[in-house]
Length: 172
Image 1 (cartoon, helix red, strand yellow):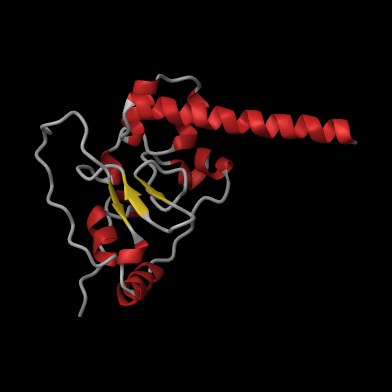
Image 2 (cartoon, rainbow, N blue to C red):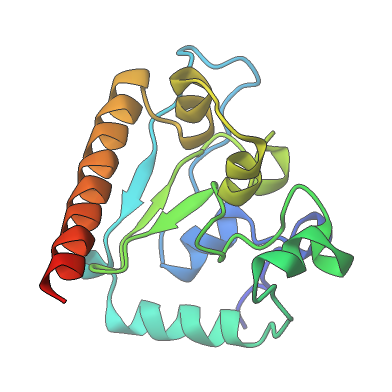
């Protein structure tokens, strides 16, 4: 018989559950004082996970039905307003990222569990307003330079969208 799924405070999914569901061993816990200021993130490619392991993970996670917030107002008020946010599967959660194109999972913080993070929701950070590149890098486990590169890329995309909208207005 398989081991039961581990859940942390508030029903949060642990790193051991994510790795176990994908058929991988959970990484060993790092000491309280890391050697480097920031640990590397880890990406699990869905191409390397067998169909059997994927089916097993779906069955394990499928047995835990719970309500999730459906819109931002749900996160701000009521039962879903608890922080740190336990809903790691939310696309705005900072603990892990899922690439929609490839399905790969990037775990940003191997040395922490979701409830140990200072910030867990990108929308909460955005509501606060302007922050420095160092702060964003700390929340996403990225360097200041990489955050700056992403900012330049995103602003370029927004400029392209606004120019396209201006052209559409001119056309009619």
